[in-house]
Length: 146
Image 1: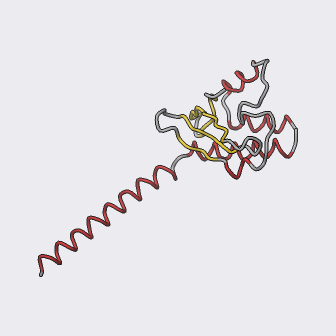
Image 2: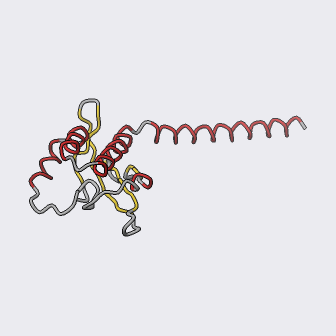
Image 3: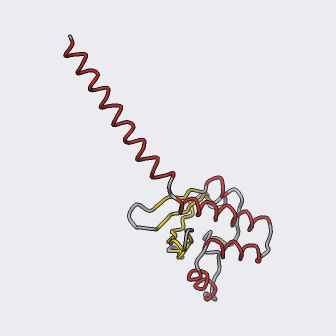
């Protein structure tokens, strides 16, 4: 009888350890991802500003805050730009923020996938972004789907 109680307690203890171990690992993966947080902030402010006004100065300030000079120069040099490479569309829709998802690419380091569902096509629009750390902040360095 004592042996069964000991075996039961040991198995409960191991189960609890496994549970907390997997819980802690999951917490670190999502809560410490500053790059994903930056991308969420960028898309929220960028889409909101695009919808609220057509003030290019405001959008330029947002891009300067969240993007490297490299990607901004690349976009500026493109004379045949027919859509906004950050949203992969010509126009913006505030409803995109409801379906906006930011995920880290599991296969490529520093690559994130920003996606949302278009109300017009009812399909998920996907942008792959390369993120780098400049000083203490993360910035968008390239749009891999552009």
